[in-house]
Amino acid sequence: MREYDDKKDEVSSMNGTERANIKPGLSVSIILKKDQRSGKLTEGIVKDILTKSPAHPHGIKVRLEGGQVGRVKEIII
Image: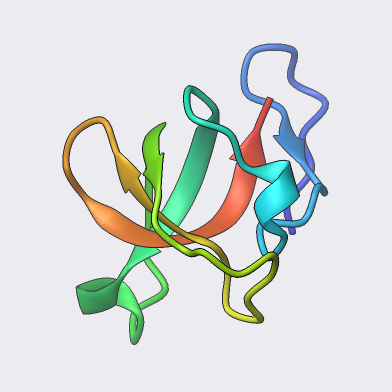
């Protein structure tokens, strides 16, 4: 996980693999299915939480407000 001291774009070490840490309206970085090989992250705001289980080893699956679906890798605070 990355951590920044920059006041504007801090990245939390909070775990994106636990559903309890993810809420609609939260700013996150996700990895889209098509970007899994490259590791490219996409930032956005959580609209819906798609994973039903309390945890997932590869990250909680979410839908962003823009419609993209992927697994949470970072929570931005």
